[in-house]
Image (cartoon, rainbow over all chains, first blue to last red; front, side, top):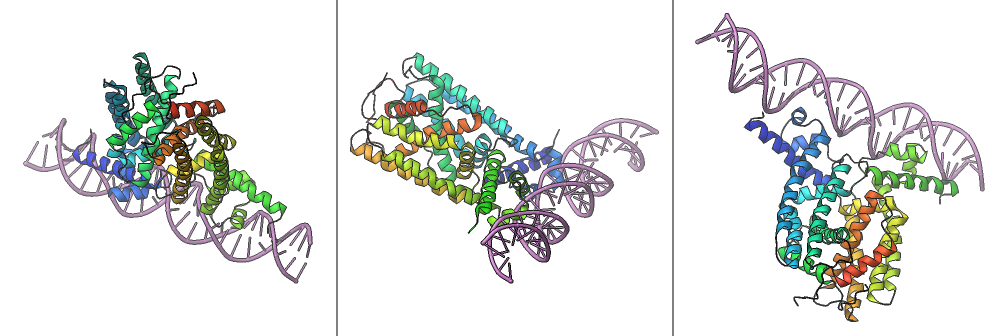
Length: 202
Length: 202
DNA sequence: AGAATACTACCGACCGGTAGGTAGCCGGAA
DNA sequence: TTCCGGCTACCTACCGGTCGGTAGTATTCT
C-alpha cells in the first residue's frame, strides 16, 4: 500500500510522462528525460512501473475510463436530437480541453503504427466509443429523429470524424477552438447537412 | 546525376523506409532496420540522404505533391454538388488505397507530436488541403448548392473529418473500406444531413 | 527500552546493447 | 585516371533496464 509520499512520486512520473509523450511521442521520449522532469532517479520509475510501456499503459488506462464515463453521461441525456448530438460532441471537446496532452497521446496510440505497443489499446478504445455512439444513433432512429436508410454505425463514425478533426486541429494550434458553440454547429451540420435542398436520393 | 543502379538503391531505401515508418513509426524504426530491408549497407543510406530525418522528409515531399495534384483534378470537376463532393472524397480514398503505408506515415506526421521533425510539414500539408477544399465550398456556395450561413472553411474541415476517419479506420483494419460507394454515401450525408426534418435554426 | 526484523521509497553506479552517423577504402565503368 | 556507388569497421552517445544499497519508519521480540 503506497503511502502519501509514494503517491506523489508516482503522480509526478505520470504527469511528466504525459507531457513528454504528447510533445515528443512515446518512442522519442527517453526514460532519462521523464525522470528528470519528475525529479526522481531512474530506478524509482521502475519501482512503480514494470517498464516504459507499462508506464504508457497506466497513463492510458487511468484516463480512458474517465472519458467513457463522461461520454456515457452525455449519451444518457434526453431531449431534442440537436441537443443530444451537441452533448455528445461536447463530451469529446471538454475531455480534450481538460487535458490536451493526454488527448494527443491517445490519438497517437489510436492511429499510430501497427507495431506500437499501444496499438491494441487505441483500437479497442475507439471501437468502444463508436459502439456507444452507435447505440445512441439507434435510439434516435427509433424515435424518428434520425434517418433510417443509413446504418447507425456509419452515422456514429461520421459524427466521430466531424468531432475528431476539430480536436486534432486544437491539439496542433491551441487556439481554444473547442467551444460549446462549435459543438452546436457540428450537431446542426450533422443533422441538417450542408446542402440547400432536401434532395434525398432514396 | 545518379545512374540506373543508384536510382534503384535510392528507391529501395525509400520503399523500405515507407513500410517501416508506417508499421513501427519514425522514431521506433532504426536506420539499421531500413538498410537491412533495403538490402544495402548503412553508409549507403547516407550517400543518398543527409540523415534519417531527410530520408523521412524526402518520402513525404515526393508524395505530398502527387496527392495535391490528384485533389486539384477532383475539385476541378463540374456537375452536381453530390458528384463533386463525392469526387473530392474519392480523391482522398484512392490516394489512400494506392499507398496505405505512406498515408499512415502522413497521418503520423500531421497529427503526431509537436516536437517531431515533421510537425511543420504535416501542418502545412493539411492547411493546404483545407484551403483547396474550402475554395471548392465557396464555389458551391456561390452557385447555391451549399448553405451560406456556415463559412466555407468550417464546411471544408467538416468534410475532411468525415473522410479522414474512414481512412484512419482502413489504415487500422485493412478491410478495403474505401470504396467509391462509400465516397458517395459520405457526400450524401454531408449534403443532406442525418436528420429527418429540415428544421434549420437559421 | 533497545535490538532485530521487515517494509516502503527511493538512489548511484552499472549493464549489455544499439542508436545515428563517419572515415577510409574498394571495384567497376567510362 | 576519375567518378560513382557502394562497403567494412568503427565512433560517440545514449538507450531501457538492473544491482546492490541506504534511510526512514513501523512492528515484533527479548
